[in-house]
Image (cartoon, rainbow, N blue to C red; front, side, top):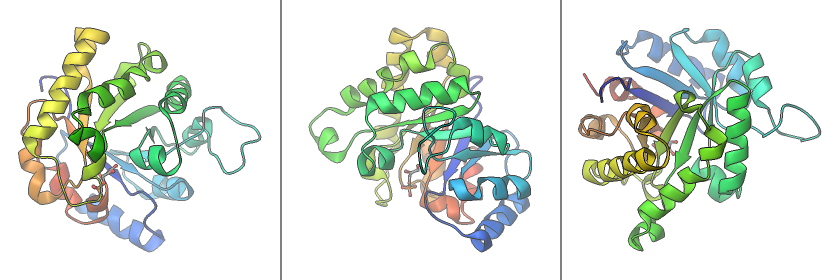
Length: 249
Ligand code: G3P
């Protein structure tokens, strides 16, 4: 993992209120968090400014979605410009819940990625296959297709992108990909990037694993050669998130 700083994201999804947020931030402040790990918390839009006002500088903050233009008549949406305006530097895009529940297709995800990067946000770009696709032997085909759709959007901005491989069947199910299953996909992705982007990008881009990561499986996953961090859902709301951040220690 030479040169790739481990990066752990906590995706709160649509969870938390001010009380719980205060507790989570206090837990993170107490840590201690491995200073060699980049930590980013993905916060519901309505709490971004609040979290920014109480979180230590050393912890990154991410929006969980954004729209593809800076402003205009898009009721209910938020733009990368607004996210930046409240001091937030990251956005999570293409999460499987956005893709499945809200019908976001590869091309819309790509447009969002393009605009977020142009606006100066860093992007956690999510990809991953469904159970049906995995059982049909289509895992690589799907994650390559999802990644390919983002290539023009990313252009030479790869240093501002983290890829999150989240097999849909592992999300919120308690069914984690085995370290071998995750490592295989991560390695295949890196190879694909080498062939379709460049050896430099393939070597430098960080690929997170997401899907039922907990304090008890994080160490084994973190030890895999091509796993450069996690995107954590449920466990990011709990004190064990600290142990997940510290999984490489
Ligand atoms: O983005 C993180 C995610 O989808 C995984 O959720 O609850 O399985 O850790 P969870």
